[in-house]
Structures are given as structure tokens and as C-alpha cells.
Image (cartoon, rainbow, N blue to C red; front, top):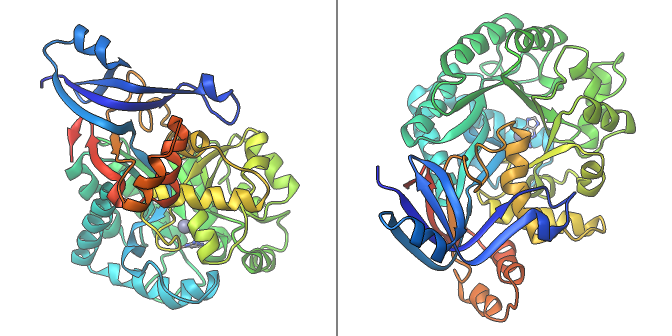
Length: 428
Ligand code: GUN
Ligand code: ZN
């Protein structure tokens, strides 16, 4: 395969801009270049230098567009694609009224395939190159998602959602079938191509202690698998958990007791945490995932980005489709900005872009492999048009710095801002 030289404005990170000064953490160039060789980033630098050094490479000049790492969505529910933006309810009623009936439709493998294709295509059209997804209790939904991702050569993380109580008949497994099905799917998909398996108890209210125990044992057998679940999203959910697990110290303890707290654990939402929970997440080097459009849409609360980052807790960013109200990681960054503002912190555009790429990749233990424009990373790339609508263009035209030019696209952009997407160096 011929080398490709992408030229444009470039943005890459060499460190976390939450902990390292911006000038050291983010590298931008007004006329930069990225050399793609065999599906990976082979070189980065100034366009003039890379052109001189690689005279045989095919040059793709993107003008003023921004070339950066494809977005990494660290928590979503592909089966909720067709019910996004369902009106009027908070978490528990929203699950019972909209979510569970929609997830029942995945008993039909044809529907699984249709929605898996749809969700991955929507993600790509929004510049997202990696999805981390809950599937449904049906193994066919997991096969559909991983197969659809393999067809597109997308790196994805996913697993069978396990529930053995507080869900409708037809949407429940058991402790034993959850263990057996998850194990079979893990053996089938984990590490195959770009697939990573995540053991997936939906959340404590829909798993009995027996099921949590079985899934904790499975994770013990496969410690390099991920584990994903939900944590402390809404106050009445937390009350419910307290009633269901009267002996637990807190919500996080309902996972830790059963071997479901670890450094490959992804804890979605993590809004209303107690001090002990934050301490344990930090001590265990577990990752939390911020889902800002979901947190405002379902009315969950204001995630404490500054507080959790200051504790060194690895943090990813996610759409949480369809509790989240957008497929766009640009819109998701905008919502993260707004939530942080409501908590008194203005996140810098570099921090937002880092969360949507490197931050999520770090949560997934895929740093250096995805979400990065550094040498050696897989060339999953997004090219952003900073003038994608008249409203954005007139603001960008006034900008004096790279960040001032990028921020309107973060705040106001959508799929129209996605000029091109590459998966492992191939245009989508
Ligand atoms: N908690 C348990 N299941 C879900 C879900 O599907 N979406 C959200 N936002 N929270 C959950
Ligand atoms: Zn979720």
C-alpha cells in the first residue's frame, strides 16, 4: 500500500492537558502533515519537511481543515440508536418505558444486524472511530455489533448486557446463562482483529448478587477483558441500590464486593459519588466515563470533572446514546463544557479534544493505539472543517489563534463539520 501524506492544520497530544501546561501537552501546526504507512501513523511534522522526506507518498491536501485523532466514544448503547430523544422521563421510568421495550426487539437477529450497521455508520459520519457499547441480553446483538465493526475495520469494545432482575420477562438471563453466554462471546471475540470484549452487568439494580458474583468470577478468569457498567447516575437510583444491597458500604461497593472493581473497569456516569467511592476508584486506578448530554437530557446531575481529574482518576468521554441526545462527540464536548461551567470550571478546547480522544483511549487501556496522532498509533483519523455552517464560519473567520478557531466547531458543530474519516489509514 502506498504511503499517504495528509496535509492540513494538525493537532496531536503528547501529554494530558489537565496535568501538563497546554504548550507542552498539545502540538498544533498551521501547515502540518501526518504520514500514514500500512495503516499506522509513521511520521508527523511540518508539511514542507515531510513532503521533502517522502517524495513518493500520495499527498492529500486538506487546506485549513484540522487533522486529528478520530473520536473515541467510551460508553454508548448501540441498541438504543432508534429510540434516541425519547421524551419526558427520568432514568428508571425512561428505562422501563422506552429502553427495555426497544431492547426486546433485539431478540430478532435481523434487527440486531440492521441497528448495528446503522449505529456504526452514524458514528463514523460524526467522526467517531471507536465505540464502546453495551449490547442487549441477546448474544446475537453482540455478534451483530462485532461483525459490523469487523466489516468496517473499526476498533470497538462491547459486551452482552446481563440482567437477571428488575427487567421485563424476555429481557432477563440468569446468573448461569450470563456467565456462560458472556464467556462464549468473550472467547469468540476478545482480541479478534480490533475487537475488545467487555463483561457487562448493566447496573446493580438489574443483577442479583449471584449474577454479579458470577460475572466477577468471569473477570477473574479473563483479567485482560474490560468490564463496563453504570455507577451513581441519579439520586433515586442510588436509593434503590441502597435498598437492594443493605449491607453495601455504597454503590461502588456493590461491584467491589463481587470482584467487579478493577483497573480495566469502566464506570459510566459516576456523578453522585461519596468520598469513599472516589478514594477506591483512585486506589484501584479504575476509569470513569462522563456522559454529559445524557446527564442533562435524563436530568441526572453535574459530573465533577475538575474534582475527579485532580484525583488522577482516568476519565473518558461518551455520548451514552440513546440516553445521550446526540451521536456527535463535538456536541458531547460542548455539553461537557457547559456542565463544567455550571460547576465553575471552563474546560479548555484542548482538554475537551483530549477527553474525546486520548482520555477515552486511556480509559479503555488503548493509549498509543487509538485516539492518538502520534507515531505508532493506528491511523484512525478525523478531518474537521472549521467553517461547516455559516454561523460557525463567520465566527471562525474572526479567530486569532488555533484554539479560538476550533472552539466554535466544538460548541456548534455536528456531522457537517466532519470532512473525512480514516480507519487504519483508509478513507471511509
Ligand atoms: N443505567 C442502567 N441502564 C442504563 C441505560 O441504558 N442508560 C443510562 N443512561 N443509564 C443506565
Ligand atoms: Zn449507559
